[in-house]
Picture (cartoon, rainbow, N blue to C red):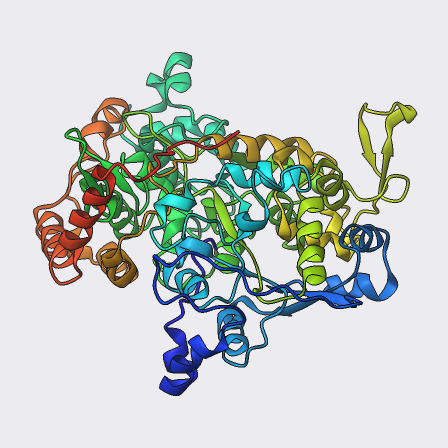
Length: 601
């Protein structure tokens, strides 16, 4: 998950106060007394041989297997860096605890991944304590001939120099570019099954009193689209039908329409449909920015989820179901829809393992992956805010030669040759040109797995886990099984991503209070979703649904409105929402911040 970080305050609980106080002492370079102090590099020193550089990231220990056999991709990476490469790994759950320990023990590796400005306490602390280099101090206008690709890549993040008041007009990590990568999954075969008994459904829903009244035009009007639900009204109607009308044909009441999970950002699409981007600062008509956590759109999204749970159209285990359990519910035929990552081949393989699909083509036929439904104003999409997913820091205080090796590696991995290497592999080993036409169409030489799927290169050559250090575009998946679907979905979801006007703008009060306020939002919404006393009292009417969903699905119960108002009052007061809003708008109005607001090409 994009929001899976652990902030630096965990040191207090993990290592105790003494360790927390010791953090500044762990600095590898000069310690700046405050955020405004200009960066001063440490004195240069040299070493004769750089035997290797170590890169710390979660869940990529396989990289070292490639190093041990000197795989084709690994050899090219070593050539680019000029030294051997080692991966240090741990699970995501323990990653930041391990990183904290390394800081305390002054054992930071040469390179390590962090969440960057989205975890301002950690990022600010690393800068303040002189533990990482400012990348743009070494990669800039004066050195762009030496690092042309890395320089060009970093330029799209230049807003970080000013929007982060503590950044000393520098960028201190190499962001891994990211865009929304989630879609709505729908059981297309279930839609067909419903359409095959549309007469029965029309009678049951009271559209007609008997099947004899049904005409072809009426059937066409009420059929469910095999392209998936285009709007919230169709989403609700389909979820309801998936629950009530035995879409799998097993004559059991054992299906439901929509499944979600414990990670609340997996329902971000619903907030977007209600014109309220997920946890984002959005300007009102008067130009004043407000956080969408307290918006009416967030309330409407919460109310709809509450309604669907109360009616049984959605899994009630919303607070405890993991991402894996959610995917299993979809793949095994319990749920008809889910919003999930564009891991189409993973879901297809799970469906085959569950004997719900007999083959890759059968799974492809049964699984529709499409855009999330839109609201009445046509808004749709998923989680956004910033267009990177973590990024890489380089340790301060290394020799000139060791620092050069790190920068050389990053330059290569952001060049066309480097991206091609970690995406497709080595020519003649992992891929070749169709009919030997150079520059034409590529074809993979990688062997499929046991189920017949050609997976990402890193599962053939583990050194391609180095793709974690760079950005690979949607078309990079073209050679995989179902590559046409994967490329199309990644491209489509990237286009729908909503980015903050002022990404990574954190004021002092936000650094102190925003995380706690968001936790309060998540906890409150989760409680509201499962509280049946807050359920809206409108009823579905199939005969008028095509128009009146726009009114019904935009109304809430008096109890929900009262509960929401209480939440907003607490958020703005006890959780410092008013203070944060005031500071945020003051920062925007200062004229010192860079407005971005769109995804770079």
